[in-house]
Length: 282
Image (cartoon, rainbow, N blue to C red; front, side, top):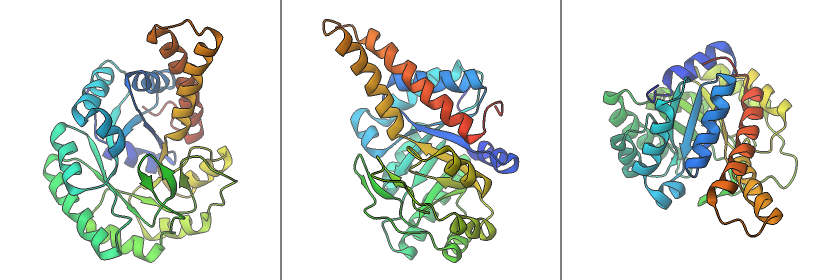
């Protein structure tokens, strides 16, 4: 089917008390692997690209890739700009045809974040494209995203932010981090519950790669409707490639190690979809 926006996906997840899995994709093989998992589990899915991924190959090439696979899929697929870092990039993604946009003003002060987010929301509204924002700062480093030590979302500020921007969903900082965790993350789940009480829009959890199943499920129970996964997919893909080349260094056909990489990505995506509770929800 054609690409859809993330709006109804997330509202359905909120109502059904599950989360949509959102997966960062780097190439054609990862796109195919994620969609394969979604079809096998009959789950709605979001494909994502970050600014650094976009810089590698371009918005139009990634969108064309995802759209071609999505049109053959039997499940709803949304194409999302993850951590859009400027108004200009958000507008480029909108014009290119992305069906979901994130503008990340979390590195700016509160009022500047509100102003930037509202500007993107207002620009996307005529096209019916939903916008995700971030308040507080998810820590860690991945690609050129550097959240440092992070900074927790303040519940009262989340309420004001949502009301003043009209944003469709909100990524909150409760102790997760981008990249590979160095230790066991300690999530402030009580803070998440407080935010949920004050904010009615769908909430998003970034930095979920490496979190325990229990942590993800409890976050969803407390209001998370979208969970982002990136690092785990990259690791799985690389392991698949390495496995083939180490077993037979003479292999030179990219399709051979590409198939092994896709198999590993599909496996990890399926486990994360089951964790999110979105299986059978397409």
